[in-house]
Length: 397
Image (tube, rainbow, N blue to C red; front, side):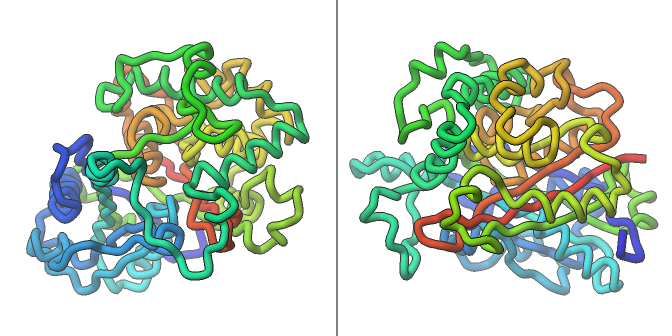
């Protein structure tokens, strides 16, 4: 890497499916406490903290005073918020690397928490549906029917279908494969609830071409991880998971109204930098991929854009079973956002750490040494066609 120190994840803590009504602050504090304990550290060791939020894409900001750092009594010398849409863990890791590499901190805890399920239930009681969002100034898509994320993401899926002949059943193969992984994960929201392509096709339309089973879950919960330098990581309680490479891309770098930009994500620049830093020759060096999956087509795009198959061949690739157990590349082995739980790229980030530690249980990938985790989201242009892409390579020695 270009930094002087290798950075490592040494602690992981989750609060999964928290009781409805639990505050974000308390979930964040508990996840951070668990991550610190998982690393074999004490509260007094943590001198930096990063709060992960979807600011930028969703208008999200903390809805409380007294952050989790004060709840825990962390002696953090700095605390700030970072994130954009579902790109949380990748951005936090990049930011923390700067502090650790310059000796400005020894141990940094990064925490994201959501109470989307609780808020959605409250909205339902008032006769509404879905999550609440802060309206962005200048947004003009709503009058044209762009009411939620499913609206503008559906355009990209529809374009891929029109250009390459991708079918709804092929998108359904992604949903079915990830549900199968979730059924191997006792903590997954959809554990014990397998589905078939027929179930996918019979599920209600949300917005064509997306059925309900093409759409990610909403959740309550929190995920935290502790980062430090390689020399300190060796003294922590758990096997260090190293950040081998990172890269970032931005769809807004291109003219978004050009139709060729509707069938890919900003993978190319992110992949180039991340793979070069990690010393990877190509996707054949990746043992599992935790791909951001807010909707099924996003998985399809990334499989093509990273090079597991050619552009336009993603539908056939997933229909052939290549992302499931025993396939070419295990994808979203915990169930992903579609079938596990939704906390942006932190869901995949946590699963990557779990796999690299060899703690995946029935879903564990044999000899898993290198994992790719990606982030996506935070649209910049009305009506929501431009998103960041983050690529983070995690590995164990």
